[in-house]
Length: 192
Image (cartoon, rainbow, N blue to C red; front, side):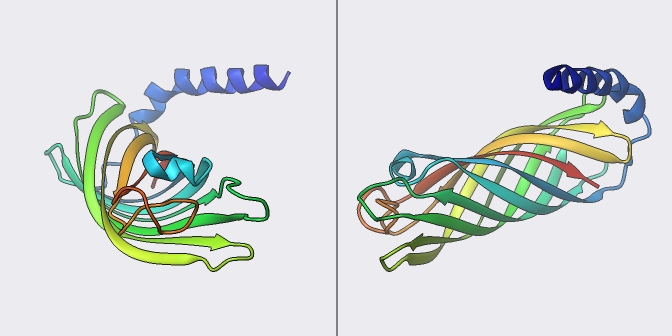
């Protein structure tokens, strides 16, 4: 029953999307919020489970040009994999990023690519052991799709974050491994 209700709402929303999108706001500056799943890859997947993230954004789209600028503040949290008995904890990342976007609207949908750089504060909190924290620079890049829904816009995007840590993640501590920590956040959100 629950699945039928979700399916009915989704189909109705898709049918109404073109008519609602025609009254979309054309303001060049928008505020957005999003969240979703954070998937550790490379050496980070050996230390952490898939986690979650949240973001707050301000974006500016250049009038009549396919380019835009975005500033993002983000928080990610991932639980530590059980590496040894009694060792539990989590990793969290607080970030501030500046991105450039490039995209062209096709009706109510706007596919885009983005790339940027920023600062990441990565922290490992462990029970029964001393945690570690680092603040490092990093880059990110990915692709997404924005869709107009009246005065707001929804979006979905995936990107790769490459944090230039001294020694990477290994067991939740900053020892061994490669010189970058990589995480793929998949984000769903809205712009107002």
